[in-house]
Image (tube, rainbow, N blue to C red):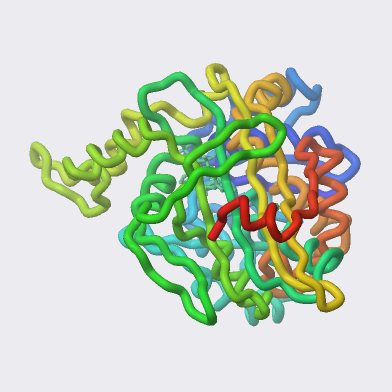
Amino acid sequence: MHNILIIGAGGVGSVVAHKCAMLPEIFGQITLASRTLSKCEAIAAEVKQRTGREITTASVDADVVEQTVALIRQCGAKLLINVALPYQDLHLMDACLEAGCDYLDTANYEPLDLAKFEYSWQWAYQNRFSDAGLSALLGSGFDPGVTNVFTRWALKHHFDEIHTLDIIDVNGGDHGKAFATNFNPEINIREVTAPCRHFEEGAFVESPPMSKHQSFECPDGVGTYEIYRMYHEELESLVKHMPTLRRAQFWMSFSPNYLKHLEVLQNVGMTRIDPVSYQGMQIVPLQFLKAVLPNPGDLGQSTKGRTCIGNVITGVQNGQFKAIYVYNICDHEACFAEVGSQAISYTTGVPAMIGAKQMLAGGWRKPGVWNIEQHDPDGFMADLNVHGLPWQCIELSSEAAAALKVC
Ligand code: NDP
């Protein structure tokens, strides 16, 4: 049993708190801290009601390193699970180094004033973590996270070499709102309005946002959706750690309604991240937009349908072409019934808990800074089946792989 500190009391933080509380043999005292104490207290009350476990709550500004250091020391945390925002990553890694605590997150660092995310800032901590004998696990959500583990597992069990990777993230859910994002609106909109980048023959190639799309039929009757190619952070670490990849792309489904609203918001300047002067105050339009949009953590009540996220992978085994599709399907209403959250928060929070479990009790704790695909995938894959995200793997003929049209 180990004490842990969860930072961030949003949609994802709530799922992590619930799922960790369900494993008392691994997770000892759980402390949930965020900027707003009342959000932590509300989650703690739900956790108590659903699992019978008491969790401790605290208020912290994760951008102030000394506050986090004091909190880690006070609660005796062995591992800090960062499910606040990507802006906090480096401050929380600094706090872990100072207080002697391991670190895990689900999204790579992004500067507040620059819509750019990449791993270089966090990879630069490699020597400091390794010298301190501490371990950091980067990207333990679904994508990044499970999609990286799927790729490593495929390489271990199905291929001698992987050549192409297409990560396809379909949300076939409907929240019944005119416009809402499934996770933090500011981070979501910054991500989807960025130029697209995909990896091809040794280099990343840039194209305009949302300029390439195709129709994709999900298995098991989830439905057929329009998926759009976009940049996603796991491409950067996967092509580094799997150098035989010749092409790697990421696709996400968007409804025409979502895209219509996004286009208007962009056109009128509401997605800007630079401050504008309004009635004597400086406000950032995207932050104001977040304040008026539905809170993703509250969408669980109304969201129906399923997500389908997985990887189409091709390569060779024993000199022969091989293609597989490995995926998870997750039902929004089932997630709500279990932990009071929609499936996007659930599919992020469950892998964060499993990554933490692997670090504390599954042999993933080695000094340094690691992307999740650098660890052995088998325990994590087994845990997905046990803890709410069962996966399927189907082998595709070359015709079937081509028919999926991820090209
Ligand atoms: P929310 O906006 O719902 O929650 C974020 C929480 O972080 C809020 O409780 C907020 O506190 C807290 N927070 C923000 N700044 C600070 C700070 N300076 N100090 C302390 N707490 C702070 O976000 P989500 O739960 O939707 O997402 C959480 C993370 O998960 C994000 O980083 C997101 O990018 C990542 N994510 C990863 C996915 C994956 O598959 N890998 C998928 C989806 C999300 P308060 O409101 O109290 O101010």
